[in-house]
Amino acid sequence: MITLISFIVVLGILIFIHELGHFAVAKFSGVGVERFSLGFGPRIIAVKRGETEYCISIVPFGGYVKMVGESPSEDVSPEDRRRSFTHKPLSVRSAIVAAGSVMNIVLALVLFPLIFMIGVQVPAYMDDEPRIGYVYAGEAGDKAGLEKGDIIEEVDGREVESWEDLYKVIALNPDQPLRLKVRRGSTTFETTLVPESSADLGVGIGGFAPQMVPRIGALAPGSPAEKAGLRPGDIIKAVDGNPITHWAELQEVIRHSGAERVFTIERDGEVFDVKITPELNKEAGIYLIGVAQGEDTIIKSYGFFESIHLGLKKAVELTALLFTVLKGLIVGDFSLKSLGGPIMIAQVAGKAAESGLVDLLSILAFLSLQLGIINLFPIPVLDGGHLMFCLIERLRGRPLSEKVMGVAQQVGMALLIVLMVLVTWNDILRLLR
Image 1 (cartoon, one colour):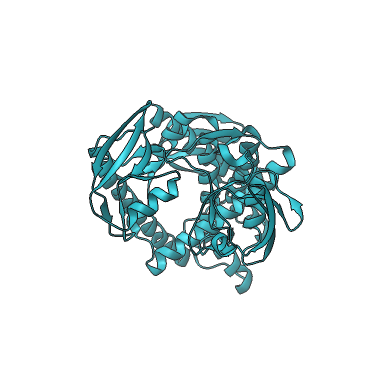
Image 2: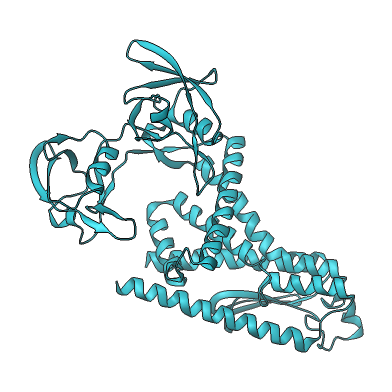
């Protein structure tokens, strides 16, 4: 029930905000609005105020604003001509068309800072002093001579008090030399760290990690670890008698061999051994036992201006991620099977609602941003398709014929139907699995 209610609320807000954009700009521009509908098809509820009928319709996947003179072939009385969409200047029509997507983007830009002000879940170590718990062999930290237990006190002469301070500096300086002041035991020394640029995000990576107890947070269903009887909360103390003090050490020990190993487990103060044989993950090319890290987290809130900065940064990151995924789908790096539809959205919204307000607002902001951007793509039926027609009209000096636009709309609708069938089929397959 929570999943269904969350889905309806999230979808309803997204559609309402989108159509409100079209409605508000149309009204402001003097265009008559005959109907404001959430959903398509037969009406469930309808109320008329003035000239506009406000209704909720039975098919929830979308909505529309019906304006006076929306179609060039529509008969419009002389007195309604000034209120007709078709007879408004091209700039006004373009603004009305774009307003829906803009409103979705604006909603996301409002919600992201709000989320950071309310508080987001972050690793508990983020406020701790930057004491290194593990150095990855061959990476930037290793090349700089850093070791487990080192405490980074300064970067380029500026004091760093927490992992959050350190991560910010490293992330913002990919491939740039950073002068570190490091404390090791009772001595201090300086070294140069050159953060390696992440191929996916373009940010700097230091090649080291904070202290991370090898505690299990979750197990994959049917995995070797689950079959061996491991549980969330278990701490892996050793593998084949060799002590494990960091999660990265555990990964390094397991990933290269599928041989049976003896894991020493601590559970509620009791220590015992279990035998587990890692399985090969063919896609990643490494061996796994099917466990996810259990990490202590805290809720951290930010000030007004920092929240705005972080919110805008998050919006930019998600926008870049959207285009990265689209590029991957086009060139074949990503499978179409990874796409999700209404069922996946409902599942994610339900889980977010169960997790709390922040998670629900996060999924709402994410979907609103994606909806706003995708709707601006130059595909007939979408707002971007209508804007493309407006641009062609500007370049030609006259609009395309209704026949041409009608055919283009049909092609666009067919593409959307095919996409909807595909993502829904993907959702069904995930449920069956």
